[in-house]
Image (cartoon, rainbow, N blue to C red; front, side):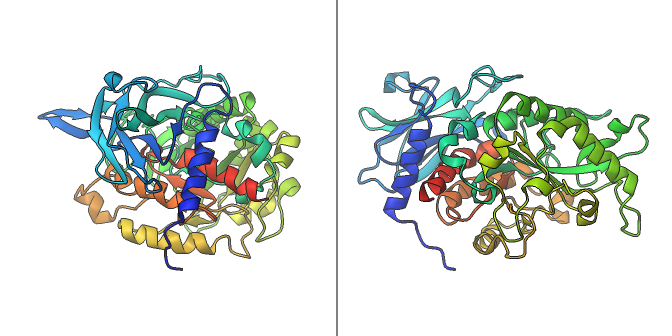
Length: 448
């Protein structure tokens, strides 16, 4: 299907929904615009500012005034709600209807507001310190970098009637690969292993609801629970159990629904002939039941027929079962019917952004397949380095994410607007997928 630019009415409708969502739980308006929209993202690669000095987590200011008759003349970064240009930390001219600018100011520690730094806090969206404002003599549009810890509950009156396959769900690719936590390394940044830079807890608080886990097993540890790790392919990154406990703490203190996906078992789960090692799979399943059991939504109870869109959010909430665990091996699923079957991953396996978007445009249009056993599907919205890229240290995962994340935001608002389900990104703060997904879920519910 050829790409068609969305209509003016479509973009206006999405912008209006997003502006409304920011003030739903508070009288304090977090986003405002008479026309178009501005938003804040975080630049995933480091910026070299002098010899031996790099700026990490540079703040990006983004705008889209393509639906407006007049484009504002300037955009600025503020350390609070923009009231006057005199309070701007820095300003830039706006020379196009759609665009972005990378500032030379870092997010810094990025502590989570609203009491969410390490435990549950206040409901609703909350702003971190960076705000963006745009306008001419006066500021006409503003927004902030925000957390969305309770976005499903905040919008429950509208989206709870949606089936899970009809939701727009923000997700993270290789969600556990955010910082090494091994006996020999606690490295926070590298070129080709770490795909995220926020903890599982922080991802949940920012609004991520789908987690792509790659689980490995190492039998040289004496305690069984220490043998299960999250990997990136063959490389150990973090032990699994502490991350499951972060998910449990979040589920215990919210009414959000979480989708956990055992997507790949790179080490220790299979014999050389490809047969599953039953006790290793059984150990993982027992661990998931022990750590997350009270919240698990059993596929036996909630699954629907192949090619359908699954249970509604309301059905899961009524039963207070808000964790769906998908498992990539259907032979194991057959013997543990509470597990959700293989979740299709739309993976382009290319290092070309052009090829990535061509592939995802086609596959999202075709999904879900009529025979799909899972009601969910995930667009894996990242490029994949080749072996030569890695051997020659050609680029990095951060640079790759920077090359696609802005287009993922734009695509989700346009070409993928009607059909995308889960969209999984690397370095998710480089996109606006969470806020756009919330708006699209509300928009889809309004059609029912």
